Length: 174
Image (cartoon, rainbow, N blue to C red; front, side, top):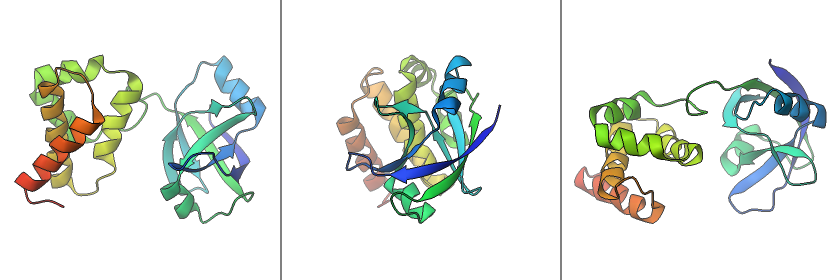
């Protein structure tokens, strides 16, 4: 069920996001009818992202953050080749092996993680996935598990950032 199209990069009204790519209505409608919500998106045949097709009343789009926009090297209103494939993974994105192993070692944290909303699960996965070094991924995973256990499964990103800072100082990571 892979679909390809040429999309236009446009500005998004947010400081967090670098912009968005307009999705043809027919493609968004096709996936909506198939009840596909999460995608693996390949931009310009080289930049892979996990995404969803969103709509703001003006039409369907895919959000891209500033980092992806920088990698694309595209200006606003330029076009980009987009390939969408349904993401049938459990969490809607790749689970880092380090995080998965740490969760498997702590039954309580695993249960807390599984009870989070899919969006919060993806946020935590992304916090680990964006790190390239495996040792640091393990430490980040352990800090997330520590937070989930301390907060009894409640996710508070301010407190989580404090736990991450504690782990970084404990292990002398900056």
